[in-house]
Image (cartoon, rainbow over all chains, first blue to last red; front, side):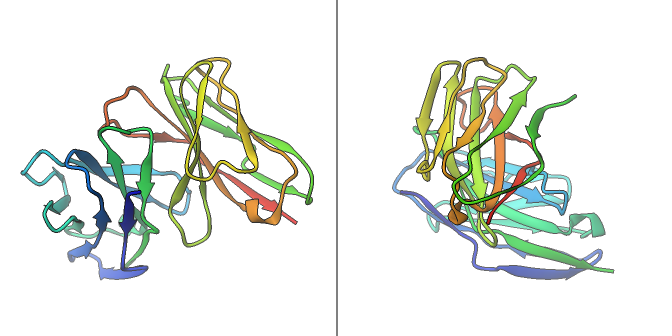
Length: 115
Length: 114
């Protein structure tokens, strides 16, 4: 079964600076999708960014970008110009293209933003 | 713009009691899911449904049951609640089989079994 590992239980960043959250995954599949979800204290799960494994170009959404290294099975999230509203739990998730009813989540990284 | 609605938001059960967590979506999504989130952990899939009348087990189905009689509703039933079922439960939906479709999540139900 696919597993998703987030090795940083907690991270902190100064407001306006850049932070990178790590994610690695284990799979034998070649076609899949990767996601970063944000969970603020409200508990609402919010999609931050997504990446198709067949695309070589790294996804970007405004201040959020990913570094997708398929061979290394790594999918890190970079947050630029961090804002207080970025403080949340961040979950990395993997979804198989052939069995896309099953989305696997990492244990999460709690991000604190210091003013 | 209701999206995915879960009720209740909080509930305390005694060991052995039963309850149903309600989930409804108004986006006409075929795919619906139930996840649980234990403290300090990611979400784990309990059950999912690909359409009315069709359900299947996920990663952690023991102790739960689901039904999907309509496209909109996907209730999760806990029979004989146990302390191990203390968790936050999330319902989610998505529009199609395409793997890169995002999941729309409800706001969660925090359940404590004492």
